[in-house]
Structure formats: structure tokens, C-alpha cells
Image (cartoon, rainbow over all chains, first blue to last red; front, side, top):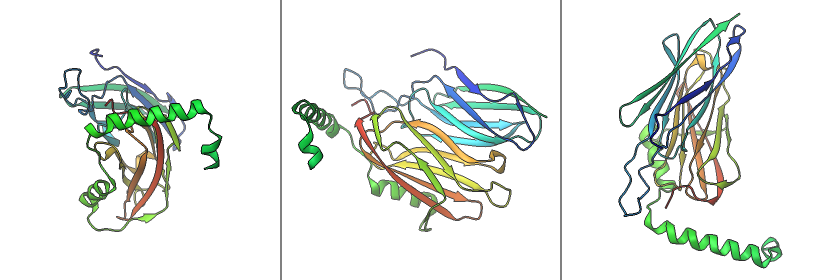
Amino acid sequence: MSNKPTPRVRVPANAKKDEIIEIKTLISHEMESGQRRSADGKTIPRKIIHTFTAAFNGKVFFEATWHPSVSANPYQSMFFRASQSGEFAFSWKDDDGSVYESKAKLTVA
Amino acid sequence: MAQRAAQTRRETLIAGMASFAAAAIAPSLAFADAAAVEAEIKKLYGDKKAEAGKIKLDVPQIAENGLVVPINVEVESPMTAADHVKSVHVFADGNPLPGIVSYKFTPESGRAAASARMRLAQTQNIVCIAEMADGKLFTAKSEVKVTIGGCGG
């Protein structure tokens, strides 16, 4: 799987003030653990997404550190208390230095 | 034992083959153990004692596929500025490495809950430790029986 990881985020577009909403995220990534060996006996080097952060209007409200035992195509869900309208920014940091990003808007009525 | 006796010959054969396969793969890998998990927790929090309770650790009792095991953690808390869950760490005592995930929460999280999917190499305990804003620690533990391990061999 050498395709560029594609993040997918499900977040409600609208929320009432102080409503607690659930956010679900998924990103395509092989999460190579560094434990596996190839057919010729060499260890396949580790390459995982090690950090996931979720921010709202620039402020990080949730962060996850992933270890090699996180499954391939990592799923992560979390909650957020809607206080005002704004924009979510989600980011996934890869071992190779890449950062994958996704944004979503939230309108608070 | 009664359950064992009720197994058909085919089930016994399959079980036997599965354990043989597991035994053939396992010795090539070094696994963490309960002591490694304790050492990780000690690294984070020193000798501070953790109480039981507050954490709802939701993992399956039996996981057929060790590659994708759902894990849902929820810590009871009002999630206000003064009283919220700061962090949650999840460890496993039978994987090559003890760490699984670590979460950092803020009052804006609203609920100290998160779900993910993890790999488990074999039947083992999942240990979860949560730190509150006032520094108190809570812990929970749950065993997952894994039918087919998820570490690739």
C-alpha cells in the first residue's frame, strides 16, 4: 500500500451550544509495526503514524499517541463540546515526517 | 472440563492445529509481560498508587482476529476546567511492545472517551491508567482472549 494516506473524518456540520458531539476519523495507512519480517528474513522497518491531534479554532482539544500495536488504517473517535462556530483541524504525523491534514466546519446554533 | 469433553473430534483437531501454529511462530518474538507494563507506568507516574474505578474499559472478551480489536475507553468525569481527565494510557502485557495508545484530553473534549482499533499478538491483559486534573490515578484491567494473533509472525 504505497498510496498516499487519505484521511476521512465524520463530524456533524451543526450542533447546539454545549452539545457534546462525537467525531470519528479514519486514515488509510499500513502502520508497519517494525516487528514483521520480509520473506528473506529482514525486519521491515517501522513506519507508523505516531501522533494524531484534533484542534478547534487553532486550539488542540484531543491528542492521541499511537504505538505500533495500533491496527492498520487507524480509526480514532473522540468527543467535543460545541461552544461556538468554527473549524476543526485534524492532523496525523507520520514516522517519515509527513503530516496529513483534514479540516471540517462546525456551525453552532 | 465438561466443555472440553463436549468438543467434537473436528473442533479438537482444529484447536490443536491452531495451538501448534501459534507455538511455531511465538518463539521468534520477544514479548512484553506484566512487569514491562508496570515499568512503563512507573516511568510515567513513579510509585504513585492508582485506585480502581471510574474507567470503563470496553474490549471484547474474545477477539477472533488479533489484527483488529476494538477498544473503547471512557473515564467518568464532569470535564470542567477544575475537574477533568488529563490523560489516559493503554498498555498490553503480551505484545512485543507494551504501549498501545495514549490520549490527552482537555475540558473542551466534553467526554473523556475515545475508541480505536488495536493489534493483539496473543491472549493478554489490557491495562488502562487515567490521570485526573487533581493528579489522582485510576486504573482498569481486562483480559482479551485472542483466537488468531495479529503480529504477522
